Every structure is written in structure tokens, then in C-alpha cells.
Image (cartoon, rainbow, N blue to C red; front, side, top):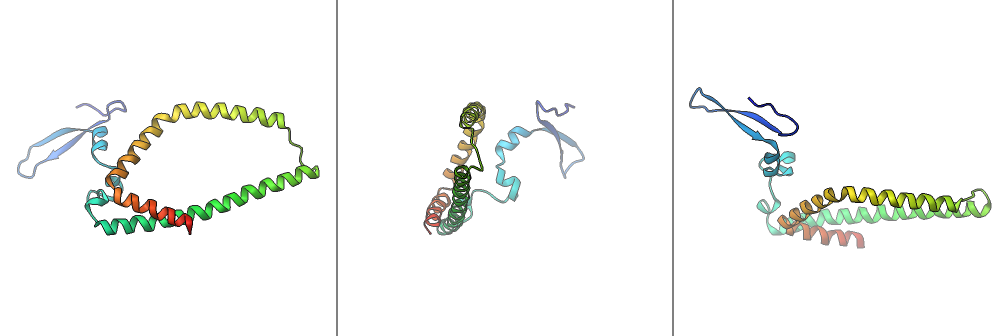
Amino acid sequence: MEMATPGNLRFWRRLVYHDSDDDSYEVLDLTEYARRHHWWNRVFGRNSGPIVEKYSVATQIVMGGVTGWCAGFLFQKVGKLAATAVGGGFLLLQIASHSGYVQVDWKRVEKDVNKAKKQLKKRANKAAPEINTLIEESTEFIKQNIVVSSGFVGGFLLGLAS
């Protein structure tokens, strides 16, 4: 019997038939199994699938709209809070600088910013395949659940506006 290694990701699965006493085995390729079984099956069980198969169009639009509105509303509130915190911190830093409490070495700041830019470019080039895969999976999900997705986008925009 072949053992599973990290390279081949194959395991033997025992098949037991109720009609006979014969035990037979089949090779279960985990990479192929993962491709055939979507992530929601692992999370929610085998009976779950795309929302399109379970609910009417009106229900999908309402579900997408409500979740989108909640996400947009929270995004708006958190965004305002973050903008207030960053702006307030910058204002306090400027007051402290003009009062003489803080001295800024602008040459060092410029050097550190340029160094950070170079590091970000290197990391962005390394992360590109993972990002492309994520984008492809997201696009496929949106295509399969277009009604819920459009309801979510509409609700999100309404949540941002409220």
C-alpha cells in the first residue's frame, strides 16, 4: 500500500459493501477532492450549496440587501471613527511640533518611506498569484450568486448613504 506524503496527498479509503464480505480500497486524491467539494460544503455540510438552488429570487435579494446594508452602515461608522482618530492624532502631532515638544527628522522620514516603498513592491510581486486566485474565486462566487451579490451591493451603497 502506498503511504500518503506531502507531495502526493493521496490516502487509501476503505470501501465496505453491505452485500459482501469483501473489503476493497480506492485511492482518494485529496487535491482533486478539494477541487470538487466547495468550501461551503466543508463549513455548512453536504446539503448546502449555492444559494441559487435553495431560495427564491425575492428572498435572495432581501438577504443580500439586508446584509449589504448592515455591512455598509458599519463600514461608514468605522470609517468615520478611523478618520477622526487619524485626523485628531495628526492635529495633536502638529500642535506638539509647533509648541516645540516634538522635533521631526524629515530626512530620516523620507529615507524610511522610500525603504518601505521598496519592501511593499517586493511583497506585492510575491503575493500576486495568491491575489489572482482570490479574485478568480470571488468572481466565480459572484457569477454563481448574482442575485444575492447585486442585492448586497445595493444594500451596501444604501448603508453607506444612511
